[in-house]
Every structure is written in structure tokens, then in C-alpha cells.
Image (tube, rainbow, N blue to C red; front, side, top):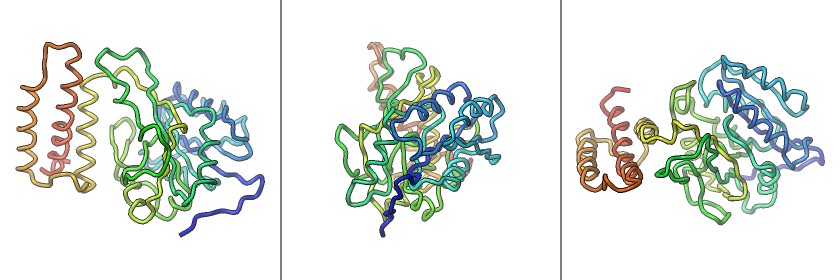
Amino acid sequence: MSFSEKYHPIMLKISAIVCTFNRSALLRQALQSLVEQTLGKEYYEVLVIDNASTDNTKAVIKEFLRYKNFRYIYEPKQGLSHSRNTGYKNAEGVYVTYLDDDARASADWLERIVATFETVKPETVAVGGKILPWYEQAPPSWFVDDYETFAYGPEKGFIQSQYGFGGSNMTFRKAILELYGGFPIEFGMCGGKMGFGDETLLFREIYKQHPWFWYDPEITVEHWVPKHKMTIRYRLKRSYSTGITAAKSGAEYVEHSIIKTVLYIVKDSISLLFSVKWREKNWQRAFIERAQPIAHYAGALRVLMGNF
């Protein structure tokens, strides 16, 4: 199946979607990074989807409506998936890209994405790149950039992964989003509640029939890392949440036996107690490495026991 388009010289090529909820201070920097793109403004639009924010988000967005290629859309249904779907349904570009409201795109971000879709063969249905941390403050000594970095390595090319790309740096042909109905609304962030999986599940479905996902490490964004994410508590809470998502979505690697899941938790907990060298500097790294799978299993167990 071909998704090729015949381009008019001034055809709108790409729609950048920024879904936002109560992050007005960071949103301004995300939108400014889209103003400063090297791609000509006649070739892209920016759709800001306000997901029922209660701060001064609307006022911040109004600052950018002086640019003719910016649009404001209000989405009253709470949930990132709702906002993402509203974005692509209102997009006029051939390609639809997503940037988080707490991220900054590199100046050539859109230009590189468009060039990739227009030149890569066989035809790619999705394009992604590297996500780098943008710290609120200097991280603690035990914290490593890899915790908040998304990358498939230094080389560009098609990836052999059904899980696709990070949500803050992913682009699709609009036709493929329409074909698969967009993002599953049962998953993902919802207001201030942590949630994951909406983009992963979509990528998994697309990959079954259209496994052409192109990765380019030069297509980069920086993603905000506030100080609360630089804690052991947050790392484990995130793993717990992904465990819930994995069990709810029927991920094939999840053990769907309550007894076996409990045994995994017990075994890994005992291993953690005796393997972490608690008096060593930066012991937190080893602790996180061992504890994250336990938190993940615990999240899955909650679903298996019918408590979610």
C-alpha cells in the first residue's frame, strides 16, 4: 500500500501537534522552538491542543496566534490520547508530528522530518529521533542521562522494533493515523495522572502490517526533566505505571499468572537485598536497576488481581 502524495509547490506538508495541560510556563518555550524552525512557514502549521487547562495556557497560546500558521483548539475531554486524536483529525498536513508541551525541538526538526518522508525508500510510515534530557537543575551524582534519553543508537535507518518512538518525537503520515484510528483512549496520561502506552500500542498495531519506522538521531528534541523525576521514588512509580499498562494491554512479555508474578517479585526482591552494595557511592544506580522490574511486576499484579 502506498501513501505517496503529489506535492504542489506551496502545499502544507506537516502539522506539528502540541497537546498541553497546565504547563503554561514550559509551553511558551515549546512553541517558540516551533516558531524558529528552518522549514518555511508556508510548509508547516502548529496546532496547540488545550486539554481543558485551568492555568493561563490560553493566554500563552494567544501570544503565538500572531503567526498565521499557528492554531488553537480546545479539547474538553481529559486525556492525552483524546488531545492527540483531536490534533491529527484537525491537521491539514500530509505528515503529523507530535511535540510535548515540555519539550524543545531543534531548529531543523521539521525540515529533517519532511526530507526523510520525501526521500527514504521503501516508503516509511513513521519517523522518529532522539530525545535528550533538559534538566531543571543539575541532577544528583547517581543520576545518568540514559534515564531520560530515548535513542536507537548513532546510525539512522529502519528500526526492527514494534514499539516505535518516544511520544515527544514521533511523526506519522496522516493517512496511517486515519487508517488505524489514532491513539487508544484507554491509555496514556490523563490530566495530572501518570499513564503510559497509548503511542506504544498504536505503534504495535501499525507494525503488524506496515513495519517501516525510520529513525534518525539528528532529528532531536530536548525534554524537560524536573527535579522530582530525578528521584528513586519517581523511577519506581514510573515502572509501576508501565506494569499496569503492560498487563492491561495484554503485552506478550507479561506473565499472566498471579502466583508466578508474586514469585518473580519475591525472587527479585531477595536478589536486590543481597546484590546492591549499599555503602558504595552511587548505590542508587544498582538499586534502580534491580528495583524497577519489581515495581513493574507489582503494577502488573495489581491488574491481574482485579484491583484496577
